[in-house]
Image (tube, rainbow, N blue to C red; front, side, top):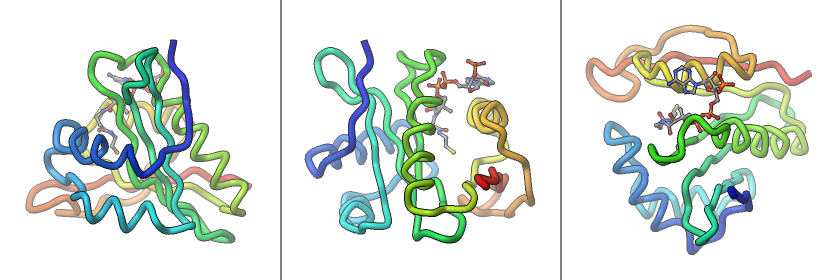
Length: 148
Ligand SMILES: CC(C)(COP(=O)(O)OP(=O)(O)OC[C@H]1O[C@@H](n2cnc3c(N)ncnc32)[C@H](O)[C@@H]1OP(=O)(O)O)[C@@H](O)C(=O)NCCC(=O)NCCS
């Protein structure tokens, strides 16, 4: 059974280690996570298994009144294809709506077909491509979902 909860400071080392596995091209450091996590305009959620092990996580930046930015969403390989990312996206989107966000925005690597499939399934539209966004030769597809 998968459970979902708000992230806490004890989860941050797990995020750092999972980032290295899931986002080897742009992992966040411990200090980046600490800074993001301490801001009231950021919200992080986790999915845990029966042993309380983190199997998925997501974060969003929402300042209210404008579009919210998805900071991260990831699910460990063994638990993919079970709707966990969809559930995490629903949680951070609900929080962004509660903050008054008007739309959701994100950048995804142009060759990340699983993630682009996820966002399209949730109704996101493709906007522009940002060249070299994740580093030289690593372009980002910008995607957006209107909330109002
Ligand atoms: C992208 C990722 C978060 C999806 O997690 P997941 O828990 O497997 O996704 P879900 O089971 O919730 O799937 C939701 C939808 O995404 C789409 N999707 C998922 N896997 C897909 C795949 N391999 N190919 C195409 N679409 C896919 C489907 O539309 C799916 O809906 P459906 O099952 O009703 O068809 C996961 O693959 C991951 O962690 N990847 C590495 C980290 C990453 O790249 N994160 C995104 C950064 S922008």
